[in-house]
Image 1: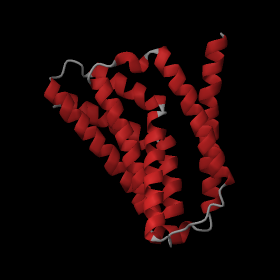
Image 2: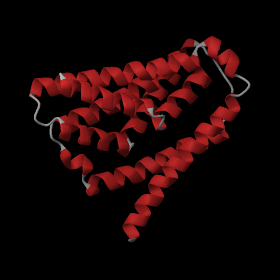
Image 3: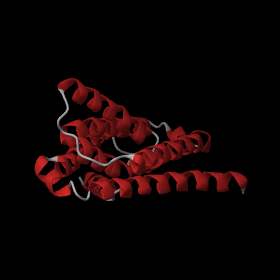
Length: 205
């Protein structure tokens, strides 16, 4: 029980710190509504689930430089690309899409969330570290931990999407949405650039 409480606290603290996933969900929810943003939420949760399964099954290669460095480079480039797209965006709310457009947007957001989650090395390192801390737990316990964390990630991300993407929230955010979009874009560019620069410095040293 004490170990479970420690896992829950560590995981919740990691979720509550705004990062790449938060800004991606926030921007998606504020531009296309929370229902379309659930695609990104599910994609991010699925990426976390993959890392959880890999880490808890003992796949420590996730933390090996031969795999982690290319992942960090690809992730940095992806974040710069997405951030630049945010900066170029008109940052306006478009909720009056037809059903086909909404389905296309949801699927696109699903792929975007999955890609973002998989290319975020911080996710991989967090779960590898957490798996090392609970490696003595029984296999069934690890499975339950994994299911719990996947569900918590999904519920939290959907909560963020609903909170920022409901019509009531959007009615208040419409005027400042362009600034929020630029803020999100700037954060992603700086974060992605920092990853690339750190990797380059490490390679040259």
